Image 1 (cartoon, one colour):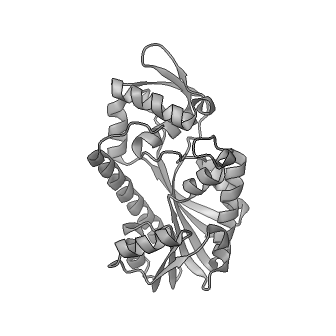
Image 2 (spheres, rainbow, N blue to C red):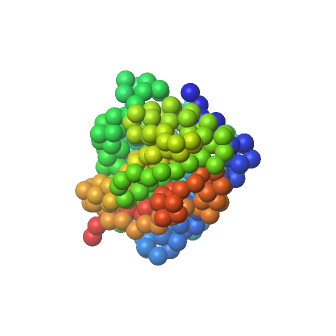
Length: 285
């Protein structure tokens, strides 16, 4: 069951706002913390303008796009024929360490939640629940492969939605009937029994704060069958530290996204979750 979504113009506007915020945060992090020579910039999945902009920003000699689906890769190449991409390469995420050339900077923008959602789907059923430990183990293996693809001074650039660090429950209320319809449909799609969402009086709901973050991420940028935020910042730190990386990051919510959230849902101001993090993961010296 697909959740009702805002109109196409609103969706495009939301995506554009998220992309702008991501590009600004990535540029800031790289300007402050990435000092290495960049012979090869690789982009897993193709982040479009982000990759192209970063190629010029870090002075990369080559930009290589990696994608596991050869047909999708060919389509991306046709659709982006004028993009300054030097190589379009078919590559499985679990084979990143086998790339012919070591990578100085590897972009992983909004791909890890797809890997998480697909790998953890119980019985590979698009409508089934996600086994968190199974999904997370797969993401960890992909990240280990990514580290194996890096030069000694290389880094990963990860853009992802995040779960809140705080625990506990909160109460929120859709401001309009169509927002309530979205909540009902989205929770059915995302499996309400796993989210722990409980209806209250009128249009009010009670939910764990991490469940609210998952629901709002679906409202911001609908991706049926996917869970966008699957780790908190603390969990990201732990997982990346365990594979020899240290983090520099920026976390926040694009202003346009926050405005849309507040226009459609009522929540105590201090409880709004931050949407997103851009993480520069550097090899520990």
